[in-house]
Amino acid sequence: MRRGELLAIRPGILYEYGMKVRNSIRPTSDDTSLKTQIAKCDVSINKEVYELIRKIPVKENGYIFNFGGFKQSEQLAESY
Image 1 (cartoon, helix red, strand yellow):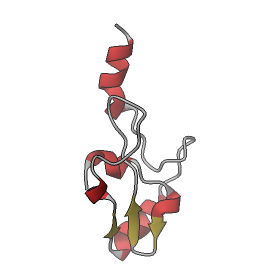
Image 2 (cartoon, one colour; image 1 turned 120 degrees about the horizontal axis):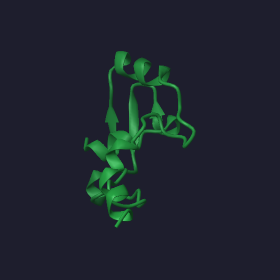
Image 3 (cartoon, one colour; image 1 turned 30 degrees about the vertical axis):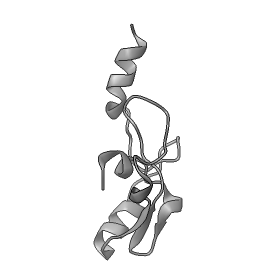
């Protein structure tokens, strides 16, 4: 999985021991579409990873992981 796909994990895409990859966070835009249509897939995860991800508090924006630092290039572009 690509970094943007991992950052786009929301509780709704998780299922027991897997996740549906349908979105990706981009560092320079708000577009959440996948880089390629081939990237659309289901990924299996083991029980330990599943349980760890489920324990992470969901952020206000609905995502599990905070991707503010990943958007630095977009923030720099906006300042010019």
